[in-house]
Image 1 (cartoon, chains in turn red, cyan, purple, brown):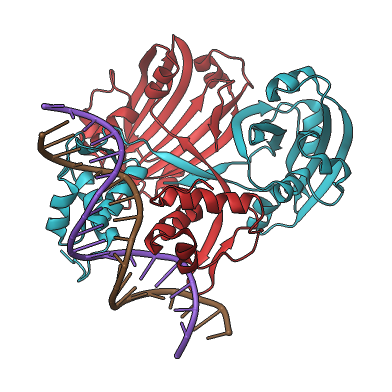
Image 2 (cartoon, each protein chain N blue to C red; image 1 turned 90 degrees about the vertical axis):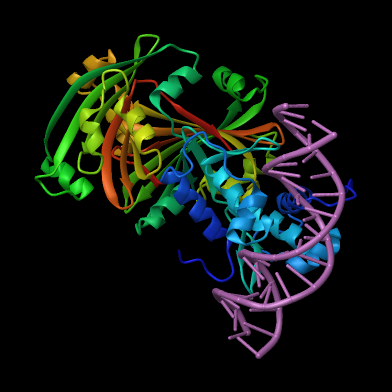
Length: 233
Length: 233
DNA sequence: TAGTGGTCTAGACCACTTT
DNA sequence: AAGTGGTCTAGACCACTAC
């Protein structure tokens, strides 16, 4: 036991975690109350509270008023994925980033998009197609529909130099989003863009964003074949 | 302003977040110190601290001793993915779960696996192939290699009823893991298992797990075509 | 209604980092 | 050396919920 003189919440957190891992407190069992643990560790209850709160966030225990703190049966592991700009991802690989605008046009809302975003069919939409390259190899294909009413400035934005994603992040950096990952196979058009053969499997990420309940944009980002998302926990 | 009588850390957190979103405090700027904010909100510094700590965790601000709290330039959005058992995922969809063991054999470490896990080539490995069904439709194909030396009990485990994933989670619920998502296209063998045509794009999740630095298992889980991962933030 | 976690306070000291 | 966040304490009251 190497308890420091002043007990830290990290010490309590790690010791409790150790007892859970070594089954001193088996799955499903109830831990001592905060007050009891504070007494055992000879620290303030707030310290124990912070330790247990972190363990609850990380999915090791479940806490309920009155009934106490229980060890979770099947710890719900959650992976955190960083979702950054294509530019960021490319530069993180120490590759040279290049951006190219492919298409830009303004029209009214296509039906499928209207129902996706909850927009009337006469809403004006900016439609953009662009590519992101890493060392001049195709990295990501991006197709995006932007609700002009929500962000009027986008109509006059220069998207030749800055990707719509990046522009939006600067104009309206904070928003709610819903994301979908799926696997698709390249149609001939996408295959051409990505420099691959038709049918190649690729990861596609669809993101719908809102701000204050108002729909901002729907984006479909397709990564080059072989692209993987990695994470640890 | 609808400040409650007793200021909560949630109130401070949301108000600070609002000021960041509305650019009262623009990107890159320095926020007032905790003491100043505590004065403004008429609450204890600990309350402000907790509020700002949460905003830092969520990627809105960056904090450094002495230099203060700054608004992040490009907020690093991170999505959280729940990674649960196939059974859990199926039952969450209100579908009926069924599990089937397909293959189970013991051998020595294949070369590729040895280098993946860092195991000697004479290490004994349990190799398992199994399927998970939702309402009798293929949901996930699982192929797994388990390091017997690390978990000797697995050799005698009954995997006819319980999937190796679930068995391992009960036997050794806490481990470190590395995860990779990628898109693959079905070869004829996988296509048969998944009831689809060869070439169909599918999401594949590979997970390597360790416990205390010792490799436990490598798993490759392939989802049925059309399977999507959804999340919000 | 009683027990448990959830939170706030006021004050103190510590630790890191910039000057 | 000084300023800012990081944390601990002791005590208090609140809020949810199982009984």
